[in-house]
Length: 290
View 1 (cartoon, helix red, strand yellow):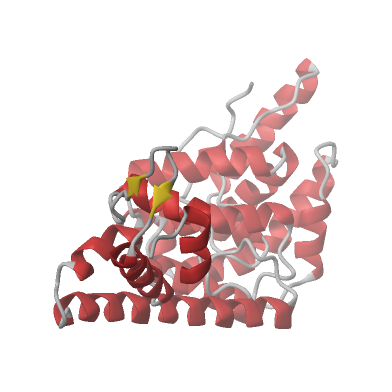
View 2: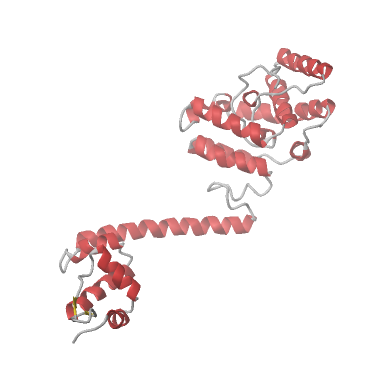
């Protein structure tokens, strides 16, 4: 008895394309051909194809099919490895299902890091982006603190005002909002001292973390928001001289018809101002201009 490729595939419950692919991988031996060029599959080919399809049904990767086939009647070791891999896959899928359930329950953005589904719904787009970046910059201990802060710190009208702050907000508004946010920011620094020097929590070193977070803050928040954050930091830290220097720089900029710029490294992150975690403390002169 001999079968064509199509007949063989039908008997094994697979496709002609799969049969040809198994030939390419060397998993299925090529059959002999008739004088007209048609392939003639025999019983041994059917048995081997049935073996391949059964193993793939069990989840065996094609790269391991050959090894299992060579293991004889008792491929215990190979099957134990496969079972462990499947167990890990099942665990991963169960964790994903749990995360999806929380995302749907809290109607939270799906892109937030694992564990933030119950705290991310009310974050601004900029804050969500910063949280995502933080998860690749700081270690799990830091992210645990961030989760705690976002969960336990109630959102206030000042947080809403910060999110709505436009680049052309007047100085009185910026001054008032910075002062309003200062107490909460100071409390964060007191409760989590490492926030003022987060190098120990950085996955790839303090310098890399500072540069990455600084770049993110600069792009995600406008100059008015950066100034508010810097003001809040100065007030919370009691840095009156630096606050006076900022006011003088703004006075000079207004006199020149220019806008003073607050460098990214000068401001704790917007997440702190909105009830989250600050980036490293100021490192640059706030009087720097564009």
